[in-house]
Image 1 (cartoon, rainbow, N blue to C red):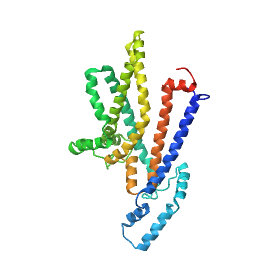
Image 2: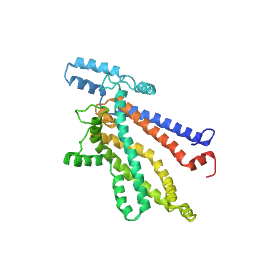
Image 3: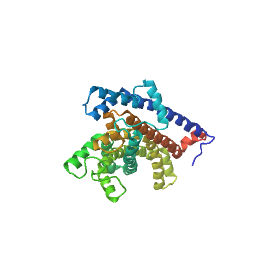
Image 4: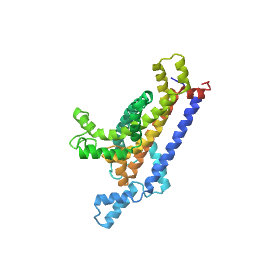
Length: 342
């Protein structure tokens, strides 16, 4: 374990922390601004949906004025922005405009675990399989590498949503092996029971595959390239002349080859979340992506702002944790910031 107290690492992490705080504030401003730039009026949409477009104009006008004042949309934009920042500190995003009186935070907290389950499982499985296949292709070479590399390229370049549509067309519409969407059957209620878990995994399979296969491909390509570079490096040849066993040499090569892959994880987190939003819409998966999509259609400002705030938090916290992990596994960074000789 390393210590940051009294060292250059403290400065390093402080700068990283300040950078992420600034990024979070700027992102929050965009989260507040973009829904206000959307065409249409959320309250007018709400009044129309409640009354189904019928009713006396005077009654509709009073109802409209009441909801505008209720959600503070009659205030100047700069006042709305200040209120948003103030409420964000306590995670008070207000009630859902469409689902009133349900709070926007409650809707997001219900959807977020489903998204994290899908993303987390895909990242872990994709990382393990991708590292193994990429390293195996680099070590084995020959026909093994020639057979695997085309699949790596195809997998890494497939858009999540396109692959999801292909899986639905083949395994749901044509073969009827898996359901086309949702996370469980309509006759089930989410609960900790063997029956529900089996039903959930049955629905979970296609979204999981459509997310994990592209990640396996991209991980394997990076791992293959970095492992080949390590194997052909001078220190490996020198270590071999010293009599080190091939097992130990491969262990060193694999450890060093993992470092560039680790540096790519922050980029993947952002891209995966973006792709997962579309993927959840394709499968009608009850995650945060599906919630954002329905909220945009209904112009539910509060839910949109709350959902994107949590996405930003998850991505930034994940990136910061990866920065900490990278410093831990790479002694060269610790040496540079401690003023030691590498």
